[in-house]
Length: 193
Ligand SMILES: Cc1cn([C@H]2C[C@H](O)[C@@H](COP(=O)(O)OP(=O)(O)O[C@H]3O[C@@H](C)C(=O)[C@@H](O)[C@H]3O)O2)c(=O)[nH]c1=O
Image (cartoon, rainbow, N blue to C red; front, side, top):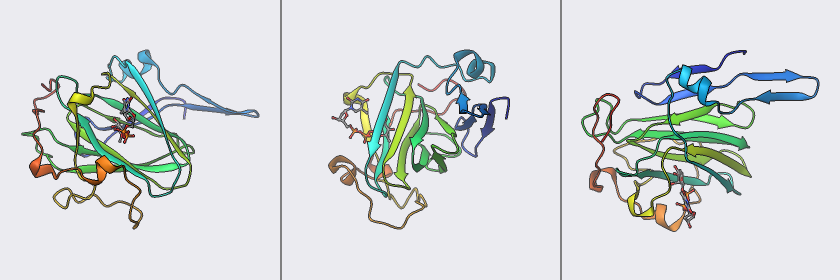
């Protein structure tokens, strides 16, 4: 693949991004992010924070997380070690896909990325031991705007690929249901306030 490939998903604004990978006798090279190339494809964010997490155990689940306005974050997520199932949930009030989820396997091997816009909750389950996830955010961490939804909220019904009791943080274990969270995302074309 010589060009960056962008694939739309059933959730408007959630995109699968596959940058070009150049292989040769040494191995491979890829631009994991290029402001010009992403902008040319309509992805025009000012990323201001890069995050990395490591999860030791297969079946670790982080999520479902979001930051409320005015500190909402667009995230560009990839997996650089092992494999994980990455999920976005539409939590934009008034959206025709409100409460729906999209999931995709991201791995060090497939080098796929998922663009998760503001107004979506994000979470992932690790599919191997020793998983490293890296993601760019277009807003800084703001714990006062941090929010979570329970990973197995039946109203969302995410089909997590491994049938295990996941390893969760204490916070995620006690996260509320979607029906009980106060949200301030409003679906309205490109401008989400
Ligand atoms: C998210 C974050 C956490 N922290 C700190 C707070 C805490 O002490 C420690 C671990 O935080 P958490 O338990 O919230 O980490 P984690 O559960 O990995 O949270 C992440 O999950 C994925 C699914 C996301 O989408 C991210 O936006 C983020 O919410 O790191 C920062 O300093 N900056 C940050 O941006």
